[in-house]
Length: 304
Image (cartoon, rainbow, N blue to C red):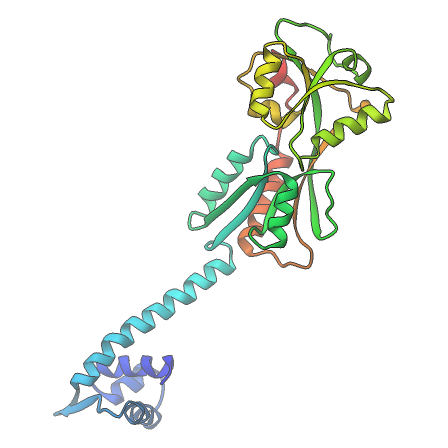
């Protein structure tokens, strides 16, 4: 017995005549009668008994009718849900986010939810190296990461490059306008050092290329504490633009480091090579890319 036979059975039960059911199903009567006979033989039970010109359900027929209605409804719901998942309207979005990456990521999630309200989420926030591991284990499907990073096993979609800034306490006005690495190297530095972020490596590589030995007095995995100490004149720091968005509540002076100093931070979206993204993941990637393109310049935000 299959779903097609159940649908035939429901129509016969509701029309109470094989001829009327055949007309409604746009088929001839003999094949429909044969389908009903096959069902009764398969179940070993009579499903209908004749009452004058009409067919009435037997007790066995009434039981089957109840389940037939439920099964066909579930089948329609399944088809609809599968279609929604295929179109990215339903399903699950599993995404990893670097500890600090995009300043407007909250807006992206809100926009995505308003457009795809049926989507459920699994969001992992961690350093980029661990996100790569979670991708390989298929715990997540997409990851927003900071570069440089070993990505041989992944497809990379570059999102944007962001500038770095030197941050000092409000009490210390050490620079006028932009600040070069040579100028920054004269002062005690405190740096973010979360493994896998790529930020620490980028800063040291820039100093190395400029042949400057920085005076690094402290390294922090707790970025909030680092910004708090910088604001109280513990030292100065170098941070990417996105970190300034995350910790904008601290009273600090901010000076951009010129791009000529070869110090920029790259943010990318990665997923496993040769992996076909689900429609939900593809829709999120498209929306994220569009949001990054619309992201305005932020230099005015840091004129304090």
